Image (cartoon, rainbow, N blue to C red; front, side, top):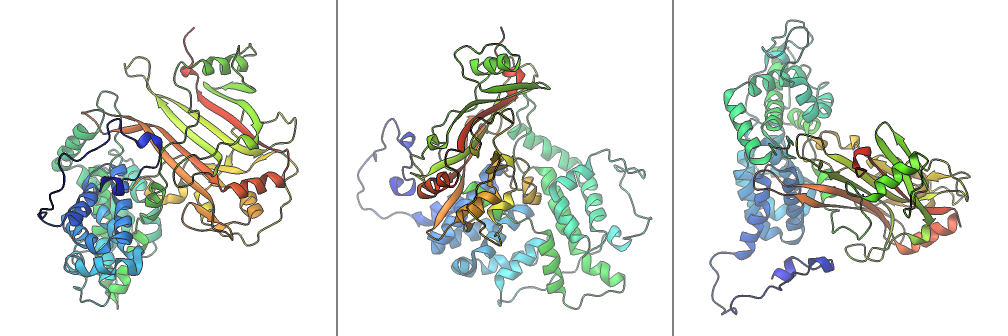
Length: 545
């Protein structure tokens, strides 16, 4: 059972001591349904505050929906009734909606739970639950009192909580908190419900000032935060939930506000559904990105603090000899060391030796490592990054070797469909063929909701057009044969402790390409495709002389 549920994907998966059952199976009857128990346990991580745990649980939920929908039904029912925060409920309900007909057995099992959720005071939760119920009877949207900001939208007589001065100064950081958690969604919903943004800020300012909120926040920080290093945990905490709760509760007063303004809603269900769509924080992108995770390829990582490579980079930047360490070019810019270590033929691009894309080529990799300070006395961590990417470079061209071998990228490049396939004519000058997205702006509020790992790699339009690619599954491009270009991610070197939430010091991503397409790419620009190894990091990573 263990071998089937956790298949081997890499030699590092092999345990030092292989598992053997303590006693042979005597064929006795098992208490309960083991498959349902596994399904419930798989979804239990949704209740954990860690964003990584929530994403992994949602990936598991997707697998259950597609592979074992009958056994998944009781597990989803348990989760829907047990979860309390509106954001996690919203993510799980949206996943069920996206699954389409595959989720029918689960929806049948959860009909009673969905009917209960359809009467909740959180607008997006109840709208999604009502959609999933379809033709089944659902309670009508319950009435709600309109916030004062919704009634006075557009006027100057808004009530302001004590935390926000009339001059606009935000002492408690309410504006920043709301903008970070829900800014994109509020901008979409504001035209549908004027005054919603002010209503949410007022509710949040009142909520975070309550003693119960402060106690809960301190309890969460005691459990998850690194108090010694003053590190904020990557978790969905009380302030995030306060914003989501305020957002969805304030929106439920929209119909009452319109009625008070002489603009009654003729179809409450349809109107709420439209507003809920604007306020939806869709989990699709973070969950799809989490599903790209697999074991780290055996590549050279960013150097640790004190590695001789940093001293060699600094020496090259200062015009000094680098000894036995090869450095093509380097610069020291405002405390940051940047440089190219090697420029080799693209044919040397590594081959994936395991995992979902075994045998494919690594077109580009990016890794970011966080190194602790030498003495843990309040000093900041140092960050190092290493990029190895195939790029177009004319023979003998030494320009831009102190710049990364990637262009500015956008995650939407994985989903955009080009109007024309273009030609196979290579550019006439050196340039990157891969992009890097370090901000994930396209993810919207998901950056602070479920979270997005960065940096990520994206294909350039030239690469897409040259290979004739079109969007397939998310983070995958296809050609006429099938999957052709894909993104994979990994996280490792976890900092663990009994006193704080584990977090990875090494994050990475790779763009991998099918072998025959890689050979075709080499033929487009023969001799002008190179693999450049580039590093960047704080000058404090150098070893002390």
